[in-house]
Length: 146
Image (cartoon, rainbow, N blue to C red; front, side, top):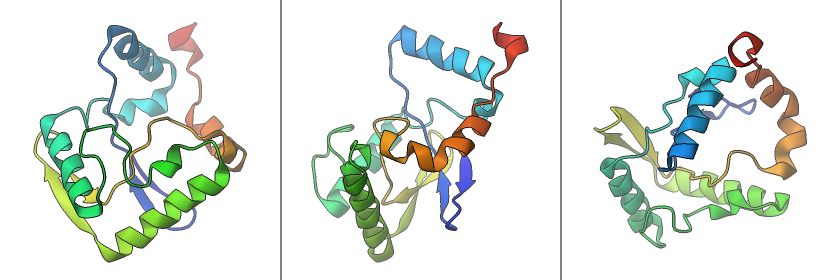
């Protein structure tokens, strides 16, 4: 999913789904009921190449190299708005110092180093700022789901 933020930042979302059947069925229902999610590849980051790119980021910036361990800029997963902003500011600072594109052959897409890794979909402290955009994006398809 490609997006350009109101502030001019360009972002691409690469998803990494959980492995159990309940989650996979949930993703299928999400795409059926909310058509705008059809553009997502829920397994784009579920491959060994992404794990290697994860390690590259940690070698560049430090930290635990295990996939899904606390990542650089992990503050973005906080429920505290100040921590989220701090994580985003750290990211922008590092991105201005170090920036490279790494090709993920498995997904046939480039991944920017550094990248942000979010452990959750939405941060509640920021929900009010983006509520209308979120509501528009998750337009419900009643004919497919009711």
